[in-house]
Length: 114
Length: 115
Image 1 (cartoon, chains in turn orange, cyan):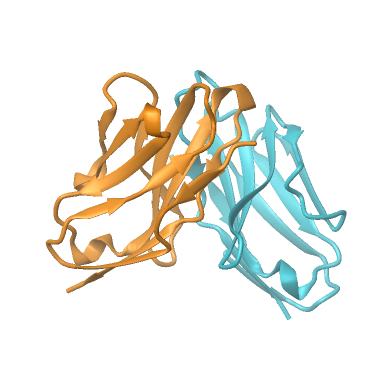
Image 2 (tube, rainbow over the protein chains, first blue to last red):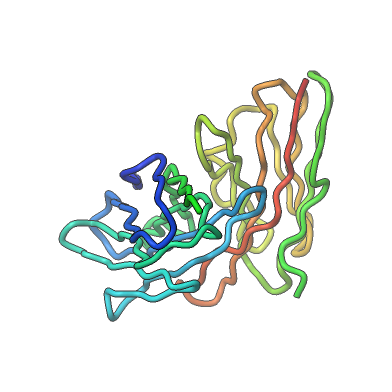
């Protein structure tokens, strides 16, 4: 069965610090990969997605993610975080041979201190 | 487009009562998903539909939970009878059916509290 792990449960950073959130998945076939963000009290919104091509994907609000197939990883990065990036971040995998089901990671809570 | 619409946004009920959550997907989307989010278990897929037909309900916790999609623009998730452990935020999401390269669009969620 598919599974998605995220390395950190809670990350605390100061403004302007660099961010990297880890995501690993367990599936050897073709996958589509996503990062969603959930701001406090709100619903999940898409940050970025990877389907094919350039493994470095750029998303909204200055976020980017790198797909490393050999490591089954899709880590999220941002060079300089802002207080407004405080949110929970979810990695999700859609393994194409498993149909339309998305498997979400447990989430990483990011707190950015002003 | 108004996005995925869910109602009610908040529901407080007593143990044993029936609860019905509602979802209107984005027009034209062929897939509809119901998720439950709790602190302990994170985001769990309960069931999803394709063209109004349930495809995978393996995530439905038990027989107290049922979901229907009578037409392309409406779905319900019903809990009968409700229990305190059902307290969670329930999200509905929809996804276009054309191509495999589309993300899911989430609704604002229904926060359910069962006393």
